[in-house]
Amino acid sequence: MEINPKLQKSLEKDEFPGYGKICLIGNSTCGKTSLYWRVHTREFQETFWYTSDNPNLVYENFLMSLWDLPCRDGYDQLRTLSYPEAHLALACFSLVDRDSFDSIRNKWIHELRFHLKDTPIILVGCKHDLREEIIKSSTHQDNQSIVTSEEAEEFAKSFGFISYWENSSKSGFGMKNFMEILVNGCTYQPNIVKPKKKCLIQ
Ligand SMILES: Nc1nc2c(ncn2[C@@H]2O[C@H](COP(=O)(O)OP(=O)(O)OP(=O)(O)O)[C@@H](O)[C@H]2O)c(=O)[nH]1
Ligand SMILES: [Mg+2]
Image 1: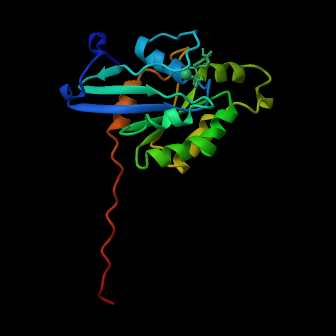
Image 2 (image 1 turned 135 degrees about the vertical axis):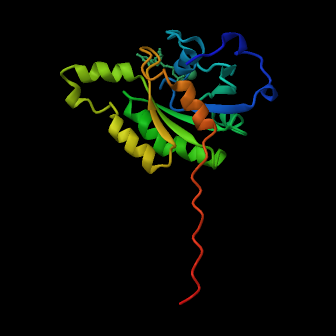
């Protein structure tokens, strides 16, 4: 993953052959802003930021704008103003918080489908390091709050997400191919199956 830091800010999208606007959503504290900072600075920020601004990222010839949307209670109207013209949405949840996973099904997917009807969505499981810690501990069998890779993958397939991706902003797990994942998501073309012509000869 090579990002040219000099090119990261204040770029005009017309200067690039490819451009993608990407919206991050998901329950509060699931890890969106930390992921955003990890991508931009390659470091984990312990500071608790509510949301961040949306500077650009460049990967090869592709310019991306990562929008970390406000997802706390009371920000619903403000958030919806940010959706227009998005090329990709990242629906985030925490791998150690089942409520945040359930909210994807109960809340976020409906909001995304309402505002971004045909936009591709990637399901994103955050805080992989914390799930690893729980799995290593002896009590993990009783832990109902962790979300397994298998169930998240299954969910992503059955709800029409284009892919499922796990990461940790803290350990860096999953970050290696992140830029490719984003570019592929922004340029995603669904396989359009042409309807078969009906044979009229009986
Ligand atoms: N261990 C660990 N902690 C994380 C990780 N990602 C985020 N956190 C912590 O989880 C807390 C919430 O993370 P944020 O990135 O602020 O969550 P958010 O989704 O932006 O939350 P809102 O802005 O309220 O919507 C912070 O204390 C982070 O330090 C991770 O990958 N591993
Ligand atoms: Mg935030």
